Image (cartoon, rainbow, N blue to C red; front, side, top):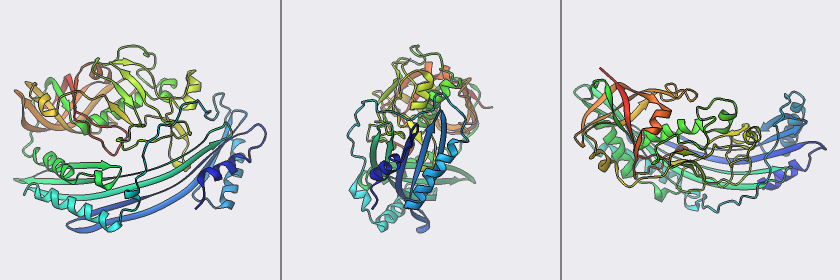
Length: 446
């Protein structure tokens, strides 16, 4: 098997005078199993490998890639990237990342149990998940039950002195349910993630999918008013993804962030501490290095409500006159580099969702949202999205509701956060979920 780091070094060694050269070499694989009514409906097991080369000379950048590590193809990629430099636009901030002295945090991101996990056991997990979901309630049907895993190895080598490699794997299960009663159907879903198969909790995934579907049966459109909302952990994770985009250094330097000139200001309630921490191995997207080969690190973005920093790649950092935060991201060997959050997490509070709800007289548990990205403007902060959930009446969950919107602004919502729950939910995405209480949100229904 080809040594990825050694191949990267051979590519970089071919740099001509005046060139900066970066080699990103990777291979990986994934398995996807979907079952329906006890049968395998979809099965994919695929592997890929490839190399991307970036060459910078006199402020111009050329990039090329190939989906193979064959020697002839690698030589062609180097030549093509060099040719593409001539067509690049001069950019005064163009350049590769440079070593910054930050040490890599030692993490166990590779699990041998998962690497050797038999295919028939993967299928059994999906089948068992379907059975558990069906057994949870007689009104339920399972739309699909899934098992998925992935693994990757990569190396980044540059003429600026970076030479880093890493590998990781992970898995998760998911199930989608349909609950039907009196000619009405509602949908639900559940997840469980892990670094190894033994971390997966099928019971939790099945129970969540059953609860989300069945408790919305009989839902009606609520009356319009302003009230306190409790975002379910999955909704909070989606919300954090939007907040993370406003804290992206590239958006900031391009004037596309509502927080552009607010470093050091209080932008959220003091109960809010938001970190981007890919060094936490519980995060599904945990990593030891970023897409440019710099050590991944824990960055505190909001501390007790105060905006402390944005996330930067080496490029956005140069434009902003600061240093990279180890947040270079890239879409594999075929993608370019950019800046982005890697693993967002809110510092959790001390109470469960049930305890939080018990203290609310008039509120709403938001179980799901629709059109979140299209309904939020990360520049102005305007927030309006369709939602469904459960009313909260005198400290208890009440009637299910749907076909309404919740609206505010991102700025106002962060300031109106009243409490962060203790129920951290690790999800197959770049943000962890947790119950989040927000006051004074507009509910528009009937």
